[in-house]
Image (cartoon, rainbow, N blue to C red; front, side, top):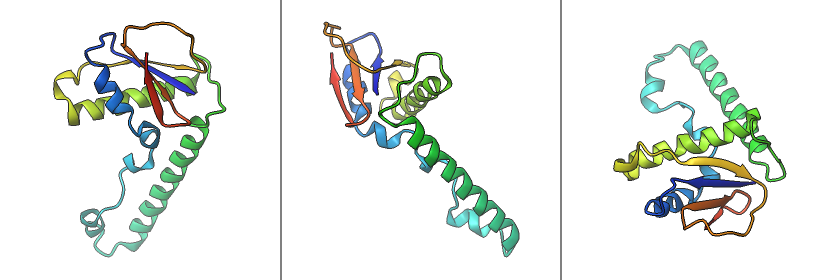
Length: 143
């Protein structure tokens, strides 16, 4: 699967390239599920039953994320535009972009890249505005 990203301005291409570093590992990562931390554990104050139920719920959500990631990030899948899976992948890239820009590049945080999925590349010049991210290899090229 190849993810195509552009902001339609080659002045911002280096931000997209930086964003793509390690993108595969951040996509659909269960670390973004609220988890248990020390302050949260202290709020249970001996209520073992509620804590246990919440812990089991957390583990189930984590497992669901792992299954979703394994399904959606499988490089052999060929999602067609308009399918639920295609939309989920594009939405995840946009969500991660928002987190990236808010943390690293505040002044373009409102810029949302155009995201699409492809399964092959065609030869052609795109003025250095487009970054193609290859999910199986965690690599990108600028075209």
